[in-house]
Amino acid sequence: MKKVYIRTFGCQMNEKDSEVVLSLLQPDFVLTEEPESADLILINTCSVREKPQHKLYSEIGRFKELKKKRPDLLIGVMGCVAQQEGERIVEKYPYVDLVLGTQAFYQIKSAIERRLREGKPVVLTELKPDFKPPLVLGSSKPKRVKAFVNIMQGCDNFCTYCIVPYVRGREVSRPPEDILREVEYLVKEEGVKEVTLLGQNVNSYGLKEKSYGDFASLLEKVSQIDGLLRIRFTTSHPKDLTERLMRIIAENPKVCKHIHLPLQAGSNRILKLMNRKYTREEYIAKVERLRELCPEIAITSDIIVGFPGETEDDFLQTIDMLEKVRFHEIFSFKYSDRPFAVAKNFKDKVPEEIKEERLKRVHEAQAKITAEIYQSYVGKEVEVLVEGRSERDENQLTGRTTTNVIVNFTAPRLDLEGKLVMVLIESAGKHSLKGRYVRASF
Ligand code: SAH
Ligand code: SF4
Ligand code: F3S
Image (cartoon, rainbow, N blue to C red; front, top):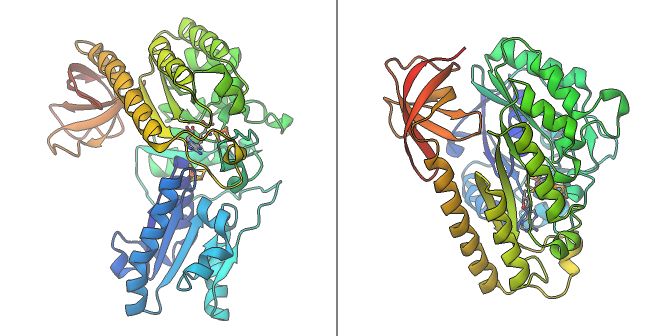
């Protein structure tokens, strides 16, 4: 049997695409963790910022030596950089055999055959506006607690800093029947207890495909699947967060009490330049309503510092929003120019040192808030879905709260994978909580 090594960068959608590719390659290939022993090496790339794109180039260089030693080795590049760069990848790196864009990777098997038949690199990067991803069942990783499920792909929002709409194509939702079949399969055949529904903007699910129903109704349908314990979803665009969706999050016991709601910036002027389509006041109003309906909800966010034209005053409004909203956690990034994205041509680029300094200030402000929030869990009993043994300590278990906080804990028995248990939180770290098992949860 042949072996495939897959290196994945970028978001959860890319992780999911890597799993799909592996399923498509079965039974001809099995997964290996060692590139040295692989017959096929796939690099699944991300181009959302400069940094992840550079990772591809360092990674490709590493595999060039392997190819020299073993000319039969096939090297493929997929994901968003493959989509963005296409032919340029094989021009620059002639030892790359396959370049498969964000829709083309479903053709991996025929692409490999073509590569072997024609003896030259195969580059497939067509993006169709009405692309329907096929339903792929049959996993690469049988028996696991958590799984990702794509509910849509692409994005129509065109935030001015962002490359995603250009490399993932137009927003298309998957039919609810396909999604439900996939979740049922995961629960019944692979023992999955928690699914994360994925899309660049899940809140706009079905808006273009009226017969599918909206995201709130999809959540309700998925929650009716027996044996499924938890549902998560990401990412939510604030502009499309409706009262109806907030109510489902608050009321449906399987829907986790966590929402990733990227704010990006705190200044209305910058939000407008970013084309985010909400103001700080509208964002706060949604957060307040959400907390009214669901007081325990954890809100996390993405923040960009140093967007073109961002003044010290604009930046202070981002810090002010962190303090007002009190996110559980944030992911923060220095703005970087991206190909195709409109903001690339904006004037008044913020110097690197200032971006660096603002990023540091954002980190510090948020670290304090996260520490306070984590500290507030100490002494409380929380429900945790057990994912397995803790990485740091074999004798402990690990899992997450409904609010998506990692909990490591001691327990009288260690065979609790996939079970919901109550844990008493005894201390808080920077990125996780510690505690001890109290009882099973029903
Ligand atoms: N669809 C999601 C996020 C996709 S990209 C959403 O709308 O929020 C993940 C994050 O990368 C974004 O939320 C943004 O914070 C960051 N990002 C995107 N483009 C960027 C750029 N050019 N420079 C810096 N950060 C960027
Ligand atoms: Fe990018 Fe904006 Fe779409 Fe998110 S919503 S993927 S940030 S264009
Ligand atoms: Fe990166 Fe593409 Fe995801 S650019 S963040 S891998 S959609």
